Length: 263
Ligand code: NDP
Image (cartoon, rainbow, N blue to C red; front, side, top):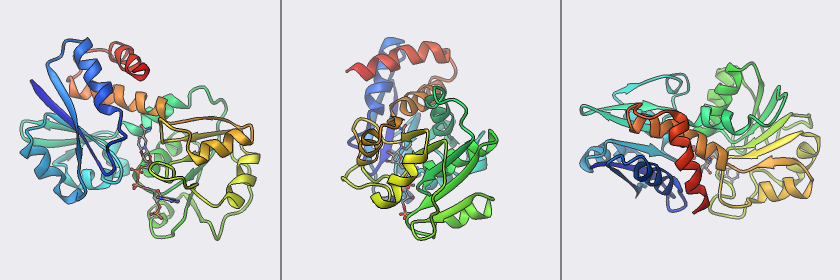
C-alpha cells in the first residue's frame, strides 16, 4: 500500500485527500492519501521521508520551500521555482508543478483572454503568471506589499501595489492571495477592487469550497466568475497521473475525481 499526503498550513480545508482516495479506490490502485499540517516548510523533506511517502501535494505557504527541498525539478516547475507535487523516485525527491495547467483547464470557458491582472505574489501567482506569459497573455501582478513583487519585476512583469494601482481594463482578474481562505478579507481594499472589477470581463478565485469576499463582490457586480474548484480538479488529475506513474489516462482519472466533488 502506497502512502500519499498533502502538506500545508492551513490544510484542514483541503479536498485533496477525498479526491485522490476516491480515484485510488475507483481504479483499485493500492494507495491511501492523508493530510499533514506542517508549519515549518524547512522540515518538508525530512517529514516526507520519515513518513515513507511515495508522493505528496504541497499547498499554502510551502510551495517555494518544496521547490528548494527537491533533488530534481522537472517540467514547468523549473521555470517558476514553485512545486506543488512531489514524487519519491528511488529515494530522490522529484518536484513538479500542476497548478498552472490546472488553472488553464479551469479558464477554458473564458474566451479571448489577452490581459490578466493577478492579485497576489506568492507561489500560485508565480506559477500562473508565468503560464499566462507563455501563452502570450499580458500579465500585471498586484500585491499588498512590494517585497515579493521584485521577482516578478525582474522577470519582466508589470507590477503594482495598492499605492501604485491605476484604473485599467483587464479581460480577467484572478485572486491568488490567501485572503478569504481562513478569514473574511478581500485581496485588496474594496475601493480599489470595485472599479477594476467593473471594467473586467471575467474573474476567478484560486480558493475553492466557499464564496470568498472576492467572489461575493464579483457576484454583486454581475461579473462572470468562478471559484478554484476546476483548478483543483485540473491540478489534481495531473498530480494523480504522476502518483500512479502514468498507468491511467487523464480521462480515466478525471471521471472518479470529478465524482468526488459531489461528496
Ligand atoms: P502564498 O502564501 O505563497 O502567497 C499568498 C499571497 O497572498 C501573498 O502574495 C500575500 O501577500 C497575499 N495575501 C495573504 N493574505 C492577504 C490579505 N489578507 N490581503 C491581501 N493579500 C494577502 O500562497 P499560495 O500562492 O501557495 O496560495 C494562495 C491561494 O491559492 C491559497 O488560498 C490556496 O488555497 C489557493 N490555491 C488553490 C489551488 C486550487 O487548486 N484551487 C491551487 C493552489 C493554490 P504578501 O506578499 O503581502 O504577504
